[in-house]
Every structure is written in C-alpha cells, then in structure tokens.
Image (cartoon, rainbow, N blue to C red; front, side, top):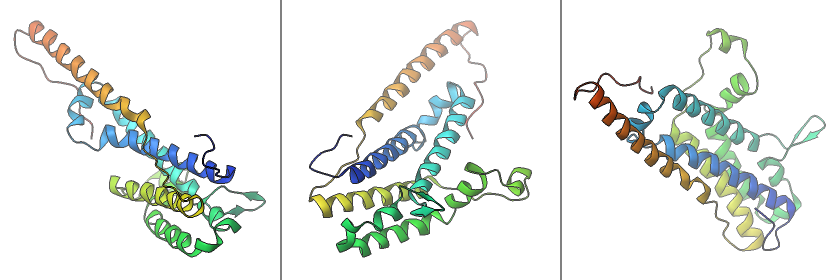
Length: 209
C-alpha cells in the first residue's frame, strides 16, 4: 500500500500492517470456515491442510498480539496500537481509540494472550510437558480481534483524513480457484479408482479433525 491522500508514513504503516492482517485472516477464513470445504481438503492431503491450518492460526495470533504490545518495552519502541493512541495527532479522539483498544485487549486476554506468551513466543515448561493446557480459541474470537483492529485503523484514517479506508483483499480471490481445481482433481481420481476397483471405491484418506 503506497502513501495516499496525504497520510503520514506512520499511519500508512498502520494501514499496511492492518491490510496484511486482513490478508492472513481472509485466506484462513476462505479455506477453513466453510464446512463444505473439508470434503475436498480431506481428499487432497488431510495432514498437509491440518498443518497449514495450525500454521495460519499461529501466524494470526502472533500478528494480532504484536498490535497489542505496549508502546515501549525497555529501550525499544513498539509499533502497536498503544503507540498510536499516545501520538499527539490523535489527541482529539484519543479517548475513543483507548476505548477501542481496551475492548480488543479484553478479548485478547481471554485466550490468545496465553497462546502468545506460553507457546508462540516462548516455550512454557508446563505447557510443553502437558501439565498446563492452553484454552481453545474459536474462529469467531479471531475474527472479533481482526475486526476490532481493523475498526481502530479505519477510525484513525476517518478522523485524521476524512475518508473511509477499506481493507478488502482481492489477492485472496485465488483460494476458491484452488478449491475448484482440487475438486476437479478429486473427481478425476475417483474416476480412475472406480475403474481400478471394479466400480466400487475403497476407503478414502484420513480426515481433518
């Protein structure tokens, strides 16, 4: 995303990071949120798609967590939502941004925070050894966090530059095409198997959990 509409480099960087977060989410959502997709994923390498699922979720939780870092840690400044809230440029609507940030943090602290600190950024001893169990994170909670961060960035752009910044990602449009090609491959595979087994299909590959 290049600088546009006179936005400063700081807020362009915020929009770029939020766009990248939306790309991650939309790719995951288009692959895994529809139950009908699992029929083809299960037939085209369940273990691969299961591992990709976990990698995308981990990446999403890390990306979300970086937005929620404190503005400063030790001698290092973080590019986080807290840092944006502290900027002089947002003084006139800082209270609204802080309210949005508090709401995002509330959801994050319910589960994603533990994943970030005990598995994704560090290897917590109790978690690795199995005496501590990390909470399940529903897809809906990830979406709430992505939407909250996106809404924060849109509010900044709206207040400062008086336009609505969209974060739709046409680059993820290839996901349905991939699924269509996989379906065609499964159909062709079944035709070959039907001939090979005399008109009756043997058991298929293991399914995704």
